[in-house]
Length: 110
Image (tube, rainbow, N blue to C red):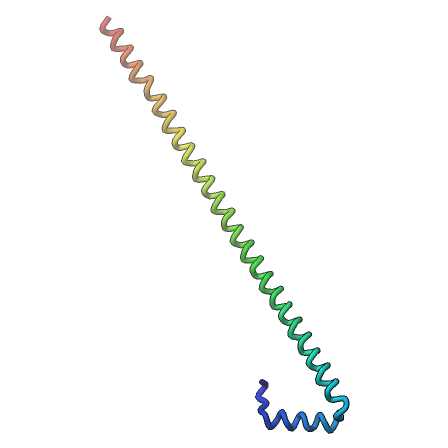
């Protein structure tokens, strides 16, 4: 933790004991612990908020891609339906021609 070993930590505690005094040191340590806990909680909340925002952005991008794919699929279906309709109308229009040709042939025979 910050490159502080056990000997350095003992020296810091001894200096704190001399400067602050044995009566106020436990209160100071308690306050410091609470402050660090609140800082950690705030940091975790901030981290969760950032992660939630990034997930939201990813979901928006994914939904946009899905909407684009759906639009393309619908356009493809419409195009295929128009091609099929054109083919059907082409065969329907082509059928009377042989019937008309048969009628012409019967008139020639008569």
